[in-house]
Structures are given as structure tokens and as C-alpha cells.
Length: 475
Image 1 (cartoon, rainbow, N blue to C red):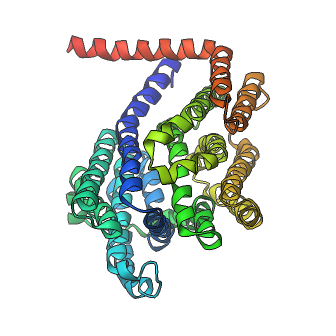
Image 2 (cartoon, one colour):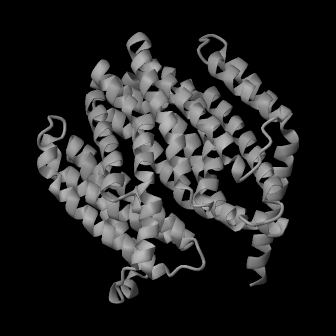
Image 3 (cartoon, rainbow, N blue to C red):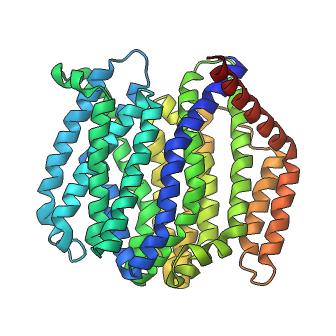
């Protein structure tokens, strides 16, 4: 791909993903004040735990087939209808398993009152996930983005109705998500041209074997990520209290702003990485993108640290305000993991699911050990630090492991200075009196250090937008 067409392709996909992902994340972000003012800390901690359990069970019962559906659909030489048929088959099987789990959910105090609802929630979540990944894999990216927005808007509207008007509490929260996922499934069936696949339904056994070989290895990977992202919440609940977990869950919402932005880019980059697989200057191009991503991530991280305390004062209920104390380590971990996710696209490109498994395994083990050691000593902050360190370990592992696919230059002066400023800023925030002033100065400094990048970035963005606008006017 030529340099100009590369930029256009990446820019176009980033914009499309921005429509869906950023729109959805913004809606989710503004739902938090609703949850924290309508639900108690204990109720919010309970629904968070239910969500956590669902995210670990669904990949297991669905054999993580959604990941294979997306990756195999990206290949030009595969029959898309055969891939979709396999996805639908697994979706039906996982739906049956979800219903069979109802008696098991009834055995536990925290889920016993909602066992049927949780099973249906998992059923719709699994089906919508598989079909959304198919829509994304066949590059119907605008459809993917619009459906994602519709899904989140439905969740928001139903939560307002169920939680505010009808005072349904936990039951209303789960029901809102269940209906939204069902709606998403229907929309994907319509936009994914599923009708023809159902008429000519055929299971390619060789393709099924290849897809399962790829996806099954990602099941333990999902479990490992569940340990890193969610086990700390269960440990906080058991070692401290469910209310403490409710506050800790809120602290994750600030790093989710950064994650929302970087996920958009990493999703777009995945398509570029696949196309660049055999290009001669792949290393040079990927290095430039990696450094640009690093500058953006470090800058946004410091911005979030500057506005953190003032934001939480108006963003959440007063009982949740002190969640700010746990944000800095979570934010640093999330920002560094963004680069690790960028590197892991090489695993997707080469269908090397073992890379995901090994990196997540080492991260999960370190997270489990650190949570066990730190939570009893320093409480909830220990869980946040454990998560941060485990993310860094994953990133370091991927730096070395992906060398067989791509050669990234990590010994860059600006790169190292930027990350040093992020670390300093995360410590400064704990200074009550002048913390915001000092961090604002650090933000100005990082902008000055990278002023050449930002000038070029703004110039290229405006140029691309003008080209697109010019083409529309010609029509």
C-alpha cells in the first residue's frame, strides 16, 4: 500500500469505529452518574460481579468462536457464508448451555434471585457478540458502528425507565442489557445477509476444525484476562466488602475513557496490519504508527490525571468520590496495555493464538499473586496496583515475543521521556494542595516536547477531511 492510501485507509476505519465505539462509550460513561445515584454501593457492587461472571462464562460456553468468526472473515480466500454457518451453530449450542446453567445459578446467594434472567442475559450476549464480530470481519464497519450505538442507546433508555421510573434495581439493570443484546442480534441478522446462509446451511468440517483450533486456545486467554480485569473485584468483595467493590468498580470508569479511545484505533489498525502483512517496509511503517500511538496515549493519560478530581466531584455520587485514589495505577496500567494490545495485533495477523495465551497467562499469575499479597496490606489500592503491574508484565512479554513478526525500536528518547512524565504525574495527583497546578504544567511540557507530532497530526487530519469534503462536493 502506498503511504497516502495507507493513511486514508487507517483514517477511514478509525473514523468509522469512532462513530460506534466512542458514541457507545460516551453513553455508557454518562450512565455511571445514574447508577451511582440510583443504586447503593452494595447494589452496584452486586451487578458488577454479575457482569464479571458473565464475561468469563460466555467465552467458555461459546468456545470463544466470535474471535475466530471475525479473524477468518477478514481473509479474502474464505467463504463467508461457511464461517457464518459455524458461528450460528455455536451460538445455538451456547444458548442451550446457558439455559442448562439456571439450576447452578440458583445455588449461589448472589445469583439465586436472578438465575433465569442471568441465563437469558448470557444467551443474548453470546449471540450478539458472535454476529457483531461477523459484521466487523466482513468489513461492514459502518453497520457495525451504527448497531453498536443503537445497542448502547437502548441500554441507556431502558435503564432510565427500569431504574428511575419503575425502581426495578438490579433486576431492571440486567433486563435492560438483555433486551438490548436481543435487539442487536436481530439487527445483525438483518444486516449480515444471514438469510442466504440459513437457506444453504452447510458446515465445512475442515474450516470448523481450523476455527476451533484458533478460538479454543483463546478460551484460557479470556479466563486469564478475566483474572486480570475482574478477579480483583471478587477478592475486594471477599476480603473487604461488596460496598468497597462498588467504589472500586467506579474507579475503572476513568481508565475506560482512555481504553475507549485506544480501542477505536487498535480495531482500525487490525485491518491495516492484516493488509501490511507482506509489505516490504512493514517494520518502518509500524514503528511510526507505534510511536504516534504512544504520544497520543501519554498525552491523554496526563489530561485525565489533571481533570480526575474535579470530574469525579460532579460525575459520581458523594459516596463514590474517593474512587479517585485507585485511578492512577489503573490508568497507567491501561495506557501501557494499549501498546501491548497494538503489538498483539501481530498475533491476530498470523493467527498465533498461543501468543495471546502465553502473555495473558503470565499476566494473570502475577495479578493473582499480587492481589493476594497487597489487598490484605493496603486494601483496595493494592488491587489497583496489582492490576497495573500485571498489565505492564503483559506488555513487556509481548515486546519480546512479537520480535519474530515485527521489529519495534523501544530505545527512543522522546518515548521514554513521555512515559517518565506520566509516572511522575500519577504520583503528583496525591498532593492535595498543588497537585492540579503541577500536573497542568506537566501536560504543557509533554505538549511542547511533542509539538512537531501534533502539528503534523492536525495538518494531516485537516488535509484528509478536506479531500473527503471535496469529493462530496464534486458529486
